[in-house]
Every structure is written in C-alpha cells, then in structure tokens.
Image 1 (cartoon, helix red, strand yellow):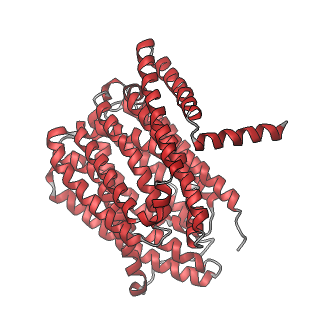
Image 2: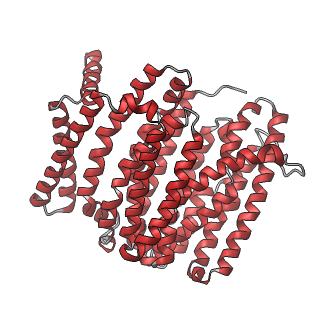
Image 3: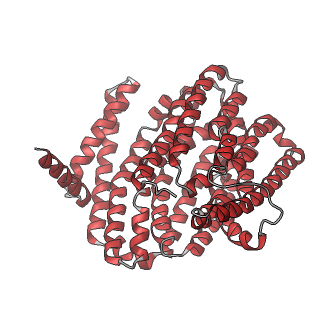
Amino acid sequence: MKKKSLGLNAFLNSIRSILNLIFPLITFPYVSRVLSVNGMGIYNFSNIYVNYFLLIAGLGVATYAVREGAKYRDNKKKISEFASQVFTINIYSTVVAYVLLLGSLLVFKNLNNYISCTLIFGLQIIFTTIGTEWIYTIYEDYSYITIRSIVFKIFSIILLFILVRKPEDYLWYAAITVFASVGSNILNYIHAKSFCDIRLVKDANWQYHLKPILMIFASSVAVTLYVSSDTTILGLLKNDYAVGIYGVSVKIYQMAEGVLSALLTVAIPRLAMLLGQRRLKEYNNVLSGVIGTLSILVLPASVGLIMLSEDVVLIIAGHKYLPSVNSLRIITWAIIFSIFAWIFSDCVLIPAKREGKLLRNTIITGITNVVLNFILIPFMSYDGTSLSTVIAEFMVMVMNGWACWDIIKPVILSKNNFKNIISSIIGCIGIVVVCLLCAWSWEALVLRMVFSVIFSVIVYGAILVLLRNEIAMSYIAKIKEIIKSKK
C-alpha cells in the first residue's frame, strides 16, 4: 500500500476540525433566532436521546477496528475477513439499538412529544453503521473524508436557509443535521470496497472480538454518562423550554472548549512516545510546556467568557435566550477543569497504561453527575445542570490528577509552573477590570464586545510580560527569531 504523508494527513485532519467548528458558528445563530425555544428544546432532547442508542449500536467497534485492523491493511484477504466479522457484529448491535429505541418510545408515554424528531435522528444509527468510517481511518484516507465533509456541510447550509424559515421547522433542522453528519454513508460503504470486501458473515468470531470491544464500550458508556445525561434528565424533570435554554449554554461552552482542546491534541502523540520510551526528563519538559501554555490560555479565555456571557448570548442566540446567561457563566468554569482532566488522562494516564484507573474515575464521576442532576435540577433547573457539570469535571480532574500524581508531581510543584499560573491569575484580574470598564464605556453591543476582547488581550499580555511569565517570554523570543531570520 502506498504510504500516506503524515504532514498531508495532519493538514487534512485540521481542515476537518476547523470545518466542524465553523459549521455550528454559521448555523446555530440562525436557527436559534428562527426556531422557538421549545422547538430547540425538542431538537436538543431528541438528539441527545438518540445518542445513547448510537452508543449501543457503535459498541466500541470503530475504536477496536482501527486498533486491530491496521495490522491487516496490507493483506486484502485478511482485512476483508476481519472487516466482515466486525461489520457483522456492528449490524447485530445496531438491531439491538433499534429494538431498545422503539421499545422506549412505546413504553415511556412522556416521550410522545419527541417521537417524530427522535425517529429522524434515529436514521443516524443505521447510516453510521453502514458508513464504516473506520475503514478510511485504517487506510488513512483523510482526503476522501475531508472532501466528503466539505461537500455535505455546504449542501446542508444551503438546505438550512431554504427549509428552516419558521419556529415550527425544527423537524427540518433535525433532518438536515442527519444529512450533514451521515448523508454520505451509503457512498462510504460502496467506496470502502476499493480497500476490502465487506459483507455479512455467519461466523463473526465473537469469542475473539467481543471482550476487547466491550471494554472499549464500557469506557464510552462511562464518558457519555456524565457528558450527555444532564440534558436528558433536564428534559425529563423540566420541559422543552428548559432544555432549549440550557442547549445554548452548552453549545457556546462546547465551542469554546473545542478551540482550546484542539491545542492539546498535537502534543498527545509526542508525550505518549516520550513516556513509552522512558525519556522522563524530556517528557517532563514537554508536559510542563503543555500545562504552562494551556494555563495562560484557558484561564483568561474562561474568565473572558464569564465576563462577556450576556454579549455572547445576544450575538450568537438573540434576546429570547438571555435566561441562559447565568447557566453559561456557571458552566464556563467546567472548561478549566475539563481541559486539565484531559491533560491528565490523555497525556499521562493512557500513555502510562493506566486505562483501568481512568475508567474507574470516569464511572464514579458519571454516577455522581447523574445523582447531582436529580438533586439540583428540581431546585435550580438549567442552572443546576450547569453546576452539576462543573462539579463533575472538577471531580474527574482531581481524581485523574491523583491517579498519576507520582508522574506529574515534579511538573505541578515546580517553581516555574507555579509562577506561571500565579502570573496568569493576576492577568485575569486585569481582564475583569477591562471588561467592566468597556461595559461602562460603550452601549453598542458589537463595539463593547470588540473593544473588550482587544483591550483584554493587550492588558493580559502586558501583565504576563511584566511578571516575566516563562511561557509568554519564550513565545516572544520565538517571534523575535522569526523576524530576524526574515531580515
């Protein structure tokens, strides 16, 4: 097989990530203004509800297939046999997922209001299975995936502006969402045959495949338990309006977290390699750089979003979603905890082969989050849901940190790291002052927002330089080197 360029794959994957970020930035402000809050609530609840059954249908097959299938990819006979077995298992799990989904809609009468929207989102289950996207990951065919994503998202945006025109059009929005995410999956299945022959088989070799698949599935369930349960419980205990309001907070929170977490992704392979080779000194230096860099970015971004929550909601969603401002202010704190929890899990625990401890921490956090939602939502509604997310993310951060304390202790307790975090906190105080002054100085929403961001960046950067923040100074040195090299 022709060897793929890692640089090209990284570039194409970056385009996909940016595209996935830009798509909601274009569509969400539009639909949040066109659709009613109740319509958005039905959409959000149905989407999250179907995700549970997507998880059952997926069964951890995609992750397992990529991990195991890579070693067969140069042998078409073996990869075809492997892919057919895994695909057959995936079809069985898909049937089970549909039986459970349809059964739940018949049994739980309080879901009657969501049946139409849920059935539309339910189409994702079979199309995700048929799509066999894990084949393209095994063969590193990112060009096909990227081009497909661009084409279908452009079509989806066009359809959105044509079909979603009034508050009752949330079913069209659901259908367009499904089209954008899995519309090309029939083509995927046909195109995958250029790599291997995929078909249903009688002997799927269950004994060999099932145990590792279920281990991965258990981890996925644990993560979903505390990522998606909040919206579901809110919908069951409150109403569509509450889900719609909370959905705006979550969407903004996820977009901010997505931008920041993308910075972490590039460091994970390097850290895994260094720890795997026991090059601990180099590993500690890189990990210290990651923690320091994210500290000077995550803290000010979170503080800035808290200060500008009302303006952000008005720009992205409009006046009718203003009740989500307090919920957004609460859940924004979860960004800080989730980013550092991810550092401890993906940069330390997984490379150190401590997946068991990570699974335990995730399960404990998931159960705690569900319990907190049932306690807080009756009294605080969507604000309680946000608070439970913050507590859950804080818990998993502490537990993950404790599970790898013997590895991260030299980094966390280093004098330079402590100094960097303190300077970042002082810089955040500067951001608070700037945002308050801008709020008093400008009445125009856009001007207030623009000047708040610009002056906050200037003041924050100046404070880091004055306090000789090591990370900030290193970036200034690199910029000076680049300028000198171009002269």
